[in-house]
Length: 362
Image (cartoon, rainbow, N blue to C red; front, side, top):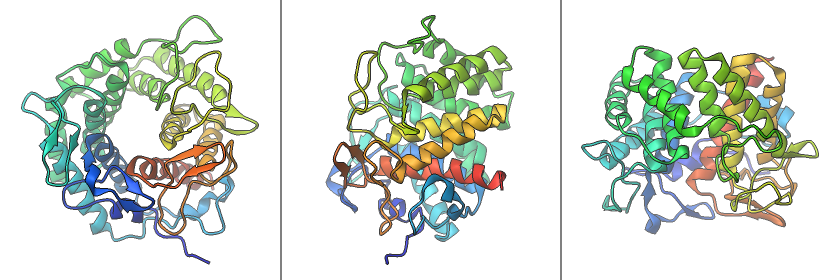
């Protein structure tokens, strides 16, 4: 039998001295497509979380339906992860303009493509920078991340999802520096941008359709309520997350919103289902459990982890034992065999939450 590789092995295979390759052909990086801030920022989030967690024995996750060879823990060398975190931070610094806007893409020569802006890549950059500032073991990396965060956090985006990602970064900064005024002001504006749950209990979502990474909205409402001392915001986030978790479940397993989105009248299940959706739900459920100690949310995290290993609409595992990577999407008749950065990061992020919760309950 093939021995499972360490969980971070494929992520490191996708990383070079410039950044994190966005796409792969099966497990091979597609260098011609270059890199993007969206993925590099997510990479900085999971590496910063891993530094805070330490070595995690992912084999404790048998409750979520792991295969016979579960992912091994963080037994790649610590200096390899530290090096990758430094690469990711430098990549984000080079994509940031003097006024704090972000250019999302560059090629293998480091040549940027597109104009700097405040789209999702700006929000995700703030999420990654804020997480590194709060959780990195390296004082110099944390200091530089905070400097970059503060520059971009002075801006605002017209897009609610971009603001939500930025708000997660602001919440991370406020965890360790409650007096950081720029982060506090940003988080307050994020709440207004995201919106509160609507009055219709059948569709309280603050938009006519579910799209992608949906759970970031209730997640940031809970984070804002926690940081700003607003219990009503926490309750609204919990209510919205509970509704979403019900919508994205079927038959005892996760049945997430497909890439094309989901409206009130759309039939489920839908495909192509993306790992990012399960990961964002795990993020929010883990926060809900931390705030409430309600075992409902611990079970929700387990359900998200199980989705990656076959507890899903197609009964197909997305985890590749041979590479340590995650396939790019769940289809009605199988899976997308490519293993890009977004998908692999979604797997790692979800298992970080699930493993931490499993260990705390042993």
